[in-house]
Image (cartoon, rainbow, N blue to C red; front, side, top):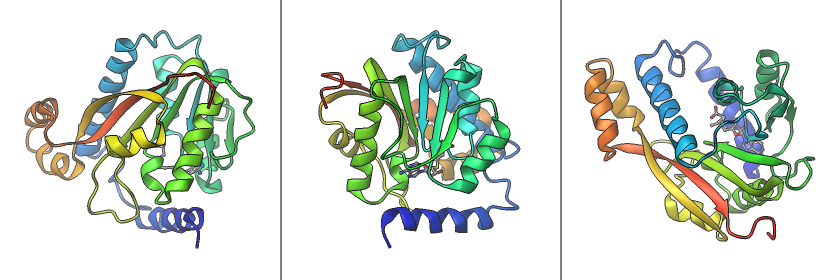
Amino acid sequence: MDDIDRLRAEYAGRASRLAHSDKYSLFDAANLFTMQQRRRDVIALLKRHGLTPLADKCVLEIGCGTGGVLIEWLQYGVRPDCLYGVELLPQRIAQAQRLLSHLPLIQGDGRHTAYRDSAFDIVLQFTVLSSILDRDVQQALANEMLRVLKPGGVILSYDFWLNPTNKQTVGMTKRRLRGLFPDSTLAFYRTTLAPPMARRIVPVSWLAATLLEKFALFNSHYLAVIRPNHPNNS
Ligand SMILES: C[S@@+](CC[C@H](N)C(=O)[O-])C[C@H]1O[C@@H](n2cnc3c(N)ncnc32)[C@H](O)[C@@H]1O
């Protein structure tokens, strides 16, 4: 079984396991905390890197899943006709398309998309690379992100660097992410209180969880801004 087949099987199993679960719903306090904090961090990062306003930017999310991240980017101000998504798994993209029928979303393999070279100002990868175990598949995805990026554009990555309990994922450490983008400059921001801790602490004290996250020692993810050093010579 290659890595793409493994991924299909993994997500089919996951869909049935989580069918009646609130774990990833905003009605779960820990998940609400995680999503809100992530939004704050993404917004701060967009400002810090001079990426706003977004109304004049074209954005692509590779591995957009069921559309949760795209909804956030619509709210940040990306125009619906300039917010693109590609997703491998038909059931997941179908769900995104039902929710966001006015967006150009397609089913496909992010390693080989039909987008022209240099089409996007920002390319997003949110927890996609970590869901791929095969280094060559990861690299092909990274190369495709670089191909479709405009000169002067950025790739924005949000992924965990440590998730020891899930053997179907690989932590995207600084070293691994740098290895996939060797000719780019990467800026890293440690974010997201590790979900097992958030699940324990948030229901007891939102404030304590907020302080712990600021402290960053127990944060499990990196937001990374990836800028190619030689735009589109790759
Ligand atoms: C953990 S989910 C994240 C979904 C979304 N980015 C989010 O944060 O809500 C990872 C997604 O990447 C998709 N994916 C993995 N490999 C892919 C590939 N080669 N092309 C397109 N999508 C892919 C998976 O099917 C899955 O929907």
